[in-house]
Amino acid sequence: MISKNFSICDINFKIITPFDYDLGDNFKKFISEEKEEDISYVFEKGSEEIEFNIDPIYSSDDTYIFIKDNKIFRKVIDNKYLTTRAVIVQDFMHLNKNKYYYYLDEKYFKTSTGVFRFMQLEQSLSLFNAFILHSSQIKYNNKSILFTGPSGIGKSTQAHLWEKFKNAKILNGDKSGIRKINDVWLSYGLPFSGSDKYYNNVSTPIGAIVVLKQGKENKIEKLSPAKAFRYIYGETAISLWHEVFTKPIVEAILELVKKVPIYLFSCTPDESAVVFLENELERDRV
Image 1 (spheres, rainbow, N blue to C red):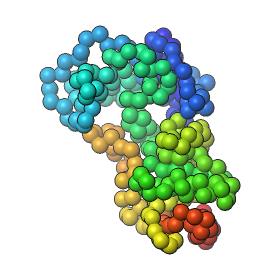
Image 2 (image 1 turned 180 degrees about the horizontal axis):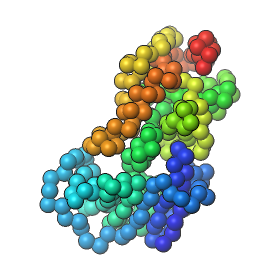
Image 3 (image 1 turned 135 degrees about the vertical axis):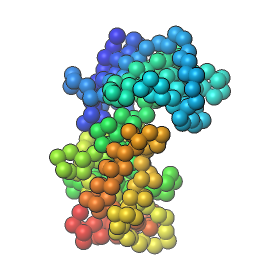
Image 4 (image 1 turned 180 degrees about the vertical axis):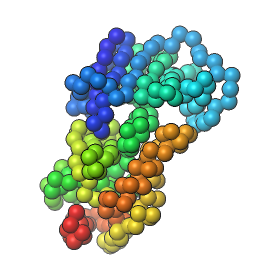
């Protein structure tokens, strides 16, 4: 068996597989030398289909969730061929320990991306009150600014404008891990970044979260915690099918929106948006 450790949001993932795989450019910086795992996934080739004989508590296009004998079974299927791709099993008493039965050819797992594909990272992170926000993340003046909003709203555009005009560093173009450590809210780079391939295993104190709207002129509103919660929750990856994973994330967001400045920013896709936002943040001393 081959064991590899990955540090994601300062949480140590131990992945044990009967096969080897390439790290890929996105996971190289996330390899950890830490020996003690926070979360483990043990892979095993599935030989026979697991029979449940009960209705799922949740289902989507390719995923079925069953609870039986105090265990959670997440079954992932291939809709085209109606075959099982994987079944991931968790015991409610040890939610950080996962058994991963795979029914795919091992060539599917030739890179770390394939190995992590069905893990539902947000579910594992929630056990440590961490969550993933759909956002482009930059570092500026030793703090991070996170641009969030629906796909296509201009998150990457604003990040690149800050890179161009303010020499900001882009940490991730699509996702940010968020976690509080020692009473400081931090954003983390992740090994997943959409089409913008920025993979930085760093943590940065959050200066501001900016919810984007497209507009013909630059306008900004500092959001109340109640308004901010609605926007942040809407862009957060969350497993809604059981409170054991949902509750920690909801509680984390409720605390985050009280501590971190969050803005609704209607903006143009040019340098004026950068200048406008920077001036606003300076007034708020972010």
